[in-house]
Image (tube, rainbow, N blue to C red; front, side, top):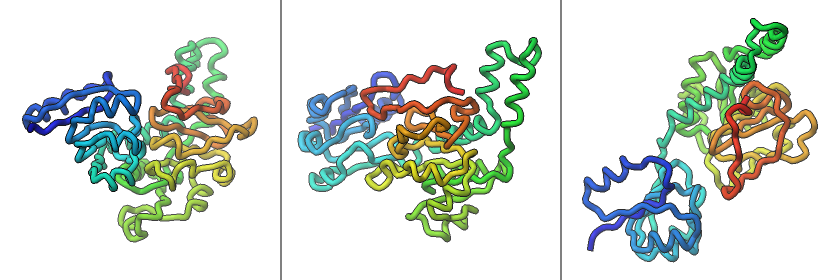
Length: 305
């Protein structure tokens, strides 16, 4: 009996490199895009091994109990959210994650958002696209209004929630800009943080001191909605919160107030500024955003400022 692999993945992303690898080891495999629990069971019930992205598909106890032959499930990501680990343990199904998945890309993206916030990149880009480049009548004043809001990164405090692989990559890159790095992570020993040149702080200390707060924690019962209204109140009015982890880590209150601003900028997360000028340099009023996977958020390019 041949070893069978089910690839429960979307139809859009190019996973041809995975298919090439599977052909090389001569296993029977197939690829399906499933939207319901029953579709996953139907598509993978004969599989010994499943390759998937857990946070996109529901691997509940019902699904897992329907996968009679499954021995391992591998996710093409770092997180375990989306799968019932307790049920996997009871059923003898091993779970594999990819801890270095997109480490460089996500740390690059985090630095890009920090730079966009500090240098008002998209605000200026939108002004230029509207013909307000400083060379047309009346546009010089608009450009000059933006300049005083720009800040240098050298000497600024970058606070990291989580100090895993991605956060450490961010810290390494942020140091090149002269930023001071601190972190909150109850599972990383203080000696390890010191070796990385990172000051380990309590969550409250981190929030109060950060000019830029970047989230790099996994989504779990412990981190779900861990950043709440009271945490926003601890932050500087000029501080930014950047989240390239999971959006559900941040509980965005509907009653932030008239001066509260925030927005989504990343497919898996969002970035917020506590009080003014969110959206990478442009003031945008906070709008409640659904985190339901069934209700994708619209992100017009021109509105990301």
